[in-house]
Length: 166
Image (cartoon, rainbow, N blue to C red; front, side, top):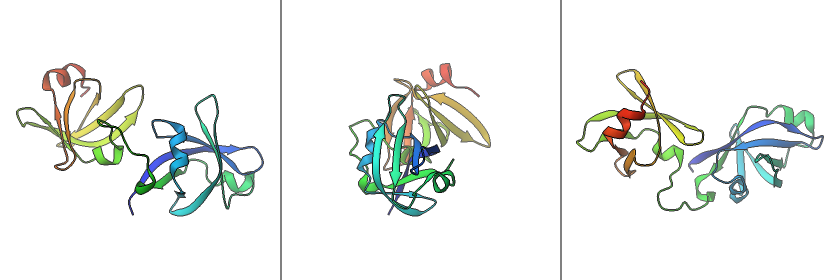
């Protein structure tokens, strides 16, 4: 089974073993769709889940009974089975599907391979070519076509040249 990284444990919350989670999903509530979550490969069932007004999720997991146990999970990544993930709307993709894709211009020139995506107000893609890194925001118009079958992103070279950071 393929797993997706769906969040990061920031810190324990309270004395009952609850974890404060920064979610990597479009909506924090999407984490509830996962029947089982994994931390360091170990499975955990979600016992409680809530989203606070600050946008962070607070999760209680079976097997984490108190604050001391929860403290051991600080900074760990939360994963979920891809099959449990919510369906995506057209034009939406999971980060794991974009990583490793080649970025090419409409003329077919290779710009680099996607090695990282940072989620800010718009996603920042990091691509590498010949050991050099280039960063660009995935703003409207820059990515013309996503071809996951062939692991390619077609990029508008004119917009890319205006926004890329070398």
